Structures are given as C-alpha cells and as structure tokens.
Length: 234
Image (tube, rainbow, N blue to C red; front, top):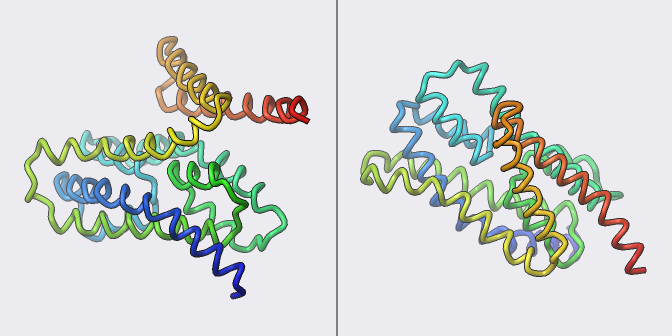
C-alpha cells in the first residue's frame, strides 16, 4: 500500500469515527430490543452483520413483534432500502476509473450516514477511503448490537424505547452541516420531505412506496438541475 493509499484509508477512518460514536448507542438499543422480543443472540448479531441497515432493522423488529410473515418483512425492508441503489450508484460515479473489484463491498457498506459523509466530503475520495469509512461504521454497529444484547433487560423500558430515535438524530447531525454549505441542496432536501408528506396525504399506495417515490423524484430532480447550475456557473 503506497503513501497515498494509506492517507486515504486514514482519512476514511477519521471520517468514520463520528459515525461509529453515533451508531454504537443506537445499535445497543437494537440489541436490547431484539432480546426483548425474543430473538436469540445469534439471530440478533446476524441481523446486524448481514443486513447493516438501522432503519430497516428497527422496522423489521416491529414487524416481527406484531406477527407479520417473513415474506412481508423482506418485501417491506426491500422497499425501504431502495434508496441504497441510488446512493451506491452516486458513490460508484465518484470513484470511476479506480479498482472496481471492491465495488460490491463498498455497496454493502453504504448507509444514509456513510453516504452523507462521503457525498459532502470536501476532498476527492477513493475506494480505500470508502472502505475505511464504512468499515469503521460497520464495526460500531455490530459491536453495539452485541453489547446491547448482552445488556438486554437491564435498562428501564422507557429508556430502551427512547434510544431508537438516536439513529435519526445522528443522520440529521451529519446532514445539517452539508446543507448549510449549499442552499440548493437544502432546498432539494426540503422538497423531498414535502413530496413525501404529499404522498402520505394522498395515500395512493403504502407508506414504504411513498418514501421510495420521494427519494427517486428528488434524486432525478437534483441530477437534472445540478448540471444546469454548473453550466450557469461556467
């Protein structure tokens, strides 16, 4: 590994530390809740090792608790995670021309938070940066899940339930600094939220489809408008 590669990996590790710190307590909450609804230690840990998607995992726990069939759980989480296709494609474009054999692993490690960090990083990024960033976040999520399961039943019920909101607070904390730097991106994010609210109000289809539709529409809108803004700047 040359000096430039080591530098990229170290930058990715440093960029991933705040995500690690944010993921760990939320994953602890997931581990506690998983034990509360009766999942085994192996199932709970495998959940985080193989899925690595916080919002989907919490939603799946709720669906398991309410007795939804596994087919319905898989389909619902698939819809919720459709946004990862767009995020992975965006990151693949950023590292175009680099070693492509690591792309499947990079795609696996994409989450809302790691994507937000990578997309708003002020310097150019590479494969090693993304692997270090995502690996650090992954370690925080898996280790937090294990610690949470081992500590399950110790914390009061009200505290266990409140910890789940930490995932959304973490994403907001990462996203807001990037929004402050660009009014256009802030307007795009606000527009995406408004689209989602409108779709929920109209109720044309289930809520999971509303989320996917809002993401797709806002992403296509951004992809169409950003080149125009660059041409105007030029």
